[in-house]
Amino acid sequence: MKSVYITSSGRFLPNQPVENDQIENYLGMLGGAPSRTKNIFLRKNGIKRRYYALNSNQDTTHRAYEMAALAVKDCLKKSNVNTDEIDMLSAATTQSDLPVPGFASMVHASSGIGRCTLASHQSVCAASMMAIQNAFLQVGSGSSAKAVCCAAELPSRMFKAKRFAGQSALAGTGAMLPLETDFLRWMLSDGAGALLLEDKPGRSGLSLKIEWIELQSNAHAYDLCMYTGSHKQANGKIGKTWLDYDTIAHANADGAINLKQDMNLVDNMVKLGIQHFFELVDGGKFDPKAIDWLVCHYSSHHFKPQIADLLKKGGGEIAPEKWFTNLYEVGNIGSASIFVMLDELLSSGKLETGQQILCMVPESGRFISSYMLLTVQGLQNPQGMQPDVDITTIRPPSINFQDKPVQEWLVRQLTGVWFDFERGLQQVPVVKKILSGTLTMDEYKRLLVNLRQQVIDGSQWIARAASNVSMEYFDVRSSFIRHSSDEHRDYQMLENNYIQCGGFRKDILTGNKNIGSEALSAYMFQRASQPNPFDLLGGMFIIEGLGNRVSGKWGRAIQQQLKLTNEQVSFFIYHEVSDANDNHFERFEQAIQSELLTQDIAEKIIKAAKVVARLYILQLEELDNF
Image (tube, rainbow, N blue to C red):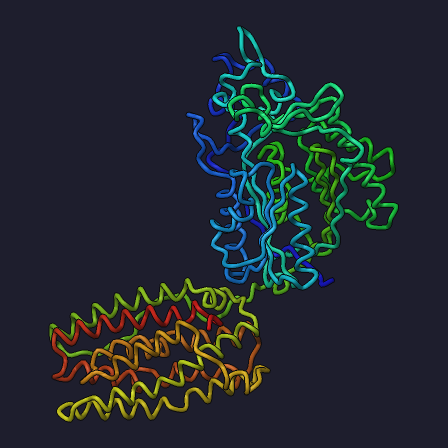
């Protein structure tokens, strides 16, 4: 097994927090009267506020899979990993929005993640640990390099007053829901959380190394405790399920679809969880004295004293100040709870390198206990690897022009195109890594391989363009030819950078264009083949401007964060000088100052600049998509 690390976390809690006195504004009143049990159970569970994916009309505002996808996006946004790098998605919930297909498929479709391996886990609270364990084993075995696991719960829609309308249990004046369902109305909340698992620690911030995950089911020894879709018979066996009724309406009227918890059995959850705790201690899996944080998902404050008492009696006491929970402020969000607690703990500023975190997630469904041991990994780079150079300020290349209206118009338009281009660049995944100081050596080498295939074509399309310039524009033609001569060895410098970084010559020599490079080269050659292709001056503005304004900054930033020599980044740094205003860019200025510039040509230059800007971004977005 490889080592596996939690490198990022995220959450999504819908709408605004709901205080205790507001609950029935969202869930509604049964029979039009305030609940007689609400305050009793709120005192027991200790929850002060929670979140609902409902509005005051009892309409659903977010679906469970949507909340999970938003938590995944939050997790990846805080990481240095892009959606196209995720190769495994493991998702958990108690009840999906749809019976079919799997919950993970629904999350995947909304997450922005590309093609990947999937795993759906459906249980109650322990579904969370199942999802984490699956991702842990996938990454640990090498089947996946970067996996996201997530969970979401949306129980509020099961407890809104409208859901119970017409049920036989509520027929008659003063009738109440069975207690096994009624008390859950005040226990459960909505929300979602996500974790990113990788086989290496994060390059910035704290990571949590997963030492092990242990999960046990006791379904063989205990009856159903928390369930939906049926009624238990007097002997504890399951009656007919909701699908066995003549119609879904009949199942609903009989209350078979209601979520229930057998209050006579639920305390076994604590006993079994603590028994498992001491089995792990006796098996040498951890020392309670070495635990710095206990992240325990107890569904109600009612259970905390029971857990603490049993730990103390068994010699495994963990001091109260080491317990971490957000139950009272966030509510009980079932399988999503452990994700949201870890997200909050990671951002709390309380963690220190080397600390051990024991996560405990029990489940009353049919009595599952689960544990996970984590070790806090320190900052791989305390400075965050932020480059010293300013690489985020957007400034267009300075263009010298004569006092002519068409030139002034062209410069104004090109300035706008440049601003859009550079803003677009800064959203490209590989560029975001350069900006944040998190680019790896492998990613830098991938960038060089992908750029090289298009750079080779640079001098060729310029030469072709020169050959199609008529003799009446001899000066411009000569400028194109000189430019082609300057460019034709650039790719050799790039190849040398790749080899100096440990790459193999044969790999870069035999590389293919990615689909963005194919589009860019095809466009350039197509335009260069037209008579007097002066519109390509727009392409030169973008490409030479990139070298003039951006390339050197990227090169120095990459050099700093990867601690490279000049020989390993010379391609980028060289272009800052070679494409400067007194060299390549001067030729662009001479062209637009000549008599060839008409309003019609100026408009074509702008269009070419827009096309080349978009295709250049596409080239960087489609790294390795050959």
